[in-house]
Amino acid sequence: MNLSEPLKQRIEALVRSDRVVLFMKGSRRFPQCGFSSSVVQILDEVLPSYTTVNVLEDPEIREGIKAYASWPTIPQLYIDGEFVGGADIVREMRESGELAQKLGASGAGGEAKPLKITISASAKRAFDEAAKEAPGELLRFEVSPRFEYGLYFGPRAEGDVEVDAGGITVLVDKASARRADGVSIDFVDGPEGAGFKIENPNEPPRVRQLSVKKLKEMLDAGETIELIDVRTDKERAIARIEQAKLLDQAELERLEALPKDTAIVFHCHHGGRSRSAAEAFVGRGFSRVYNLEGGIDAWSVVVDPSVPRY
Image (cartoon, rainbow, N blue to C red; front, side):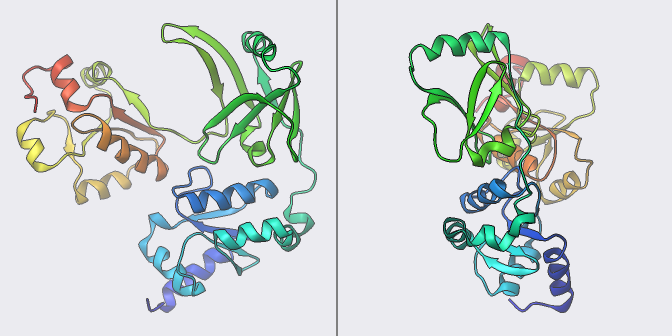
């Protein structure tokens, strides 16, 4: 790719927008490839803040950054305006200590503040009971870059951060520390069974599941929502929900221009394709994104039998 002067200037402005800049697929809170996720995890160990550029949102930047650095892959890390490397190089630099040296003392963010984790009385009772089955081990809590949680008893490991959570010692691995700060853990026993409920103020928006009954209630109440059909024209010719709009290129561009807090409900035949579309919109920064459980098939069975099933 030939790098035009305007595109080069755009990239240079991004590279110098912060001391540490990572060009990646997705964002720091929502990595969308394993290599990008691994670099985010490494940087999260040592940096309280840095800038990420989501190349999936701009094809020109995605291809242009490869030409700019003469480096064919994403992610790409820049420190002080200098290209450092991709995932493998960053990993090697972390292991050798070169990354910490390059970032310097100020890059490591100084002394980390104490983590705060809140455990409810009911969760404490459940942990106390479980601890009887794991003598000599402590409660461990992990948060992956995609905010998947690990909560189990295990031994200490090098680099663990120890948190006193209301009389319970919780071990948090260093990579999870910033994502775990401020978490609340409860234990609930409801109609769907007993289990731990985790609330994390650091967690980005997620796709929410929406039942067809609830969608009908929202439509009947006149709530402002965008109902989007991700199926094919052929399928829409067989069956359709009256208010739904087809997700073609024009509709995609219209949706992307809407405020990020717009309520958007995606549907397909059974819910699989629409789930993928919904996750893509969460990755674009939309915060109120729903996937219709069971798709139009569930709508036909539960809400409107006049809609043909196929």
